Amino acid sequence: MKLTDDDKRKLEGEYGTVIAHAMRFLADLGEAFDAEEMIDLDFAHVYTIEDYRIPGHDKTLLAEALEENVKCVIPATAWISGFEMDENIYRKISIDDEKREKIQARIEVSRRLGITCINTCAPYIMCDQSTPSFGAHIASIESSAVSYFNSALGIRCNRDGISALFGAFTGRYPNFGMHLDENRKGRHLFKIEAELKNTADYSAAGYHIGEICGLDVPVVANMPRPSTEEMQGFCSALAVSGAVSLAHIVGVTPEAPTEQAAFQGGKPERTYHITNNDLDSVYEKYNSPSDKVDFICLGCPHMSIHDIRKYSELLKGKKVRSNVTVWLMSSVQNIYLAKQEGYIDILEQAGVTVLTTCPINNPGIPGPNHTSINKDYSIGNFATNSMKLLYYSRNSFRPKKTFFGSTEQCIQAAVSGTWEC
Ligand code: F3S
Image (tube, rainbow, N blue to C red; front, side, top):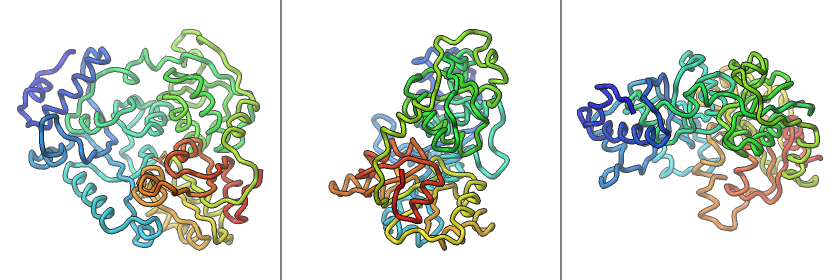
């Protein structure tokens, strides 16, 4: 692979052990995927993995990075689940002082490394100007963010893990996968004939298409223009039933002004017709008959400020049933803004908890820590409008029954205590 003189200096240790390891990792990654060169990155969304060690080293990579005064060389944000701005929320979700100190320590380390802790899985809806522009090359963790970046915004990234952090440390990344034009070409055509009425329908459609596509790039025709939340539902589901990192929606996403453009002048290998029956099959698989509901979770992926407002309007003057727990999830800055706008007051008065945690990665309740500590733990009957969350919930908080439906159905169930089919 072609390396610049500066890449070589990094590799040879001129910038310290951590940068040398990061560069070696990226170079090996590039070799494994036949990358011909390294490219500059514009941004990285990272996870600061606590216990990662350079092979043969006693100290963690993060400890070594601090000792060597490593700093990200490009704008970088981090997702640290479990960070909350409110004492009461820590109590509600059973994050004790010990866990809280660990979360705070990770935040401190991230900051010292030059990373901004925005604590969200949806960095693309940050309320600032640093979201990269069309065509930018970035590195990112979180499959739903990767799918959204590539599809909705035309920003190029692969499904990264620690490579995102190494990209932030070096500013470099091997040119392979979704960074290359040829891999962004549509493979199969999906003609939407189903009626897509809400976020859950988009999520179900994404789930069904992802199952068919696996790693391939779908081109979706005849899809009504999705809202942000619907697009999030669609992209996140594509990335969970399959490993789809990019979908073109004709007339909607930036690389698909026409069907021809989405296929880069070529033809689809296969054409599928997505009907109401296909969506029904997803609903039937994950829905139980009407019953009481115990836990409702919305905002997977994290919701925008506009969606927080919408939920506050839906719940204004209503009260969540006393035995039902309702979580809405968004980013730190959206929650801050929503507080100023008065939306959080409305939601809290209704009995909803608004938090930045991911329920799946959450170190408190109902996260996997809890299910692994207490083998008998179950969250009870669980409802959501996100196929991604439903899919992961099965192992993470062992629901007795699951319900999947529209936002309105979820809110109705929150108030009545019962899921109506
Ligand atoms: Fe975000 Fe967790 Fe859902 S990371 S996409 S809220 S599963």
